[in-house]
Length: 386
Image 1 (cartoon, helix red, strand yellow):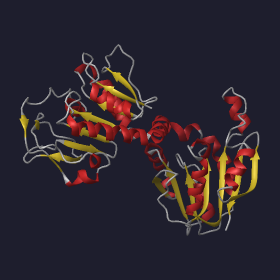
Image 2 (cartoon, helix red, strand yellow; image 1 turned 120 degrees about the vertical axis):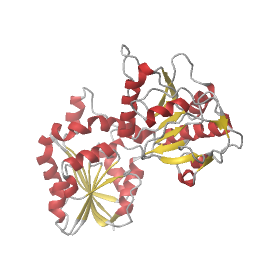
Image 3 (cartoon, helix red, strand yellow; image 1 turned 90 degrees about the vertical axis):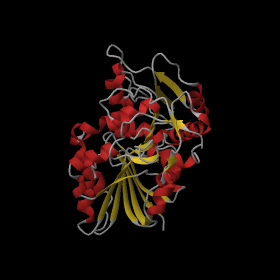
Image 4 (cartoon, one colour; image 1 turned 30 degrees about the vertical axis):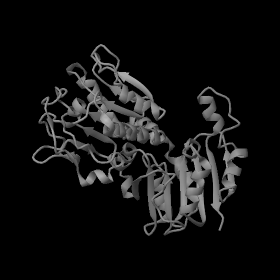
């Protein structure tokens, strides 16, 4: 797990920042802002970004990095001068504030519910540096401020924070708690961050690249044999390619929900009108925001063998499923075909190998009634025991 620290190339990464990040088991990549002749900083292998300073020559590259991070929900923490780029993506770094200190900065009520600020406790009573006058973005959630001034700390979306009264070199105890909290949040979200970053890059043309697989998806969904009026989930739905076939099977009185952890994929699904086939839900397939025994069918393509604990995932799917609910695991390629495509042998430890998948399903409450690892598709069908 790695965090990119964007800094002034003339300044080393402050020790307090590095200690907080490495203490959570994170690798620190200290990046001077990119110049035109340098390779671009990207999100490959990156689970978080700490933004300390952005000299003029690095604005374009770091703006692109932030845009990609926001789209993929990669956690970002900007401190001091680094917050200027969040406030105005076209501006250069704030020169460092007025050089004065000011009392009266306090946390707002929203900070008590914020996933990062709620872990840090109250701000210190001593005066804090007074940043320059630039305002935060209009849609920012104010987390700290003082009367008559723009917010001194804010959040954008759910994973990006700006703290104007801190810089990396003068953290203090409260700032150290903030960095430790950010590091813990990055570590906890690491698997999802990697997934979102990977699929966000591919979401734009995913549907067009794999449009030829639509008949295979329709044939797989037909094997579920759901009744009209049923509730069906497409877990890890991507652009929602299975949703039209699921809607046709459950009929106008049924419900179809496409679930994915990558917002960019769901946005692509909406562009392709999959929202007309059912609901699109951004959620973790391991913690579904659904009541127990409420689902009659689950379709999932290429997901189960990618989760960290497949048995825990199968138990969660069983929790939301009614007795005799159908689970259909699918991939439009067989295991041997995929291994050959990647120039590797079949892996005996592959979860989808029959000797591994059957026990995983059976021990989590699912009864397997079909297993097919064919040349052109993979399919396993199971029914939840009553």
